[in-house]
Image (cartoon, rainbow, N blue to C red; front, top):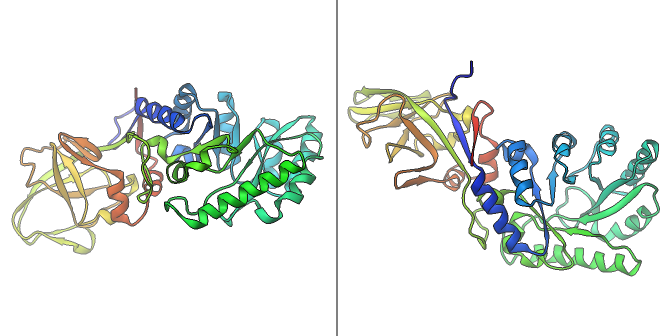
Length: 372
């Protein structure tokens, strides 16, 4: 028998679809690839992917082969955006995954496997325009790409690059990446090499560098914006709604005397007799340790401060503002209750990180619930 989970991550699929359609409208006529790496940023990839497929996603983007194989049955093109390890080439070819070509040698390996399997493989050329992570350096890419077009059983359907600093608006380095990538496309065009799918923009660039959503670009990649979140420095050019709420329950309510210490390391000493609660969630569920003695949760529609250090499974809070609270009452860690709201961005700021990190840190024992 399945017991109700103590901690639930509610994912609003209706809002997800609305966000995706707003992004499509914003970048039209570019197509949109939904980036679903890391289990859709921890939200649960298959329900998310199915909703986005129905909302009009043109393709899925992932980081590695196992993520790609999970999505292949849904019927949309699935592109590995990083690289393939040698032992991953054969299953990628067999299952029709869009393979990244990080250099000429990788293209040759994929070509040989495609010939061996008697399959034609759709590929996307990876160009390093300044990220310094993967792909052919932009200044050296043309020669290798021209050699790739003669390899058997490869269809060079796409070419793409990645910004390293697009979260900074008006960034000169990003503008330089954009210019060098366009120059490469022009050079290849002189040799008769063109690509149906040309993409460079991810979520940050959709907002800060709209030129990366216009010709010669024909596709954009979108991840964090689909869920209604932005990098803290990004110019928010679209109206998007957060799609997740993280909720738990009060596990205990007690009166503790002045001078009582709270949690590991005695990080908080009560200055007076206080009504305190213990909630059934801790850092194993995704509550950042940085909320210790600093963060808040919502109980009965009011903000209740975190007391002391967050534990793995439990967190202690002050209930003086919620005198009617009882064990079993709902606690909102992220989301709204009454007129109050706690945002993912607030947690990220307290932790000194970004919303990607917070989403991907939500624990595996947290139940994902999908709301229509």
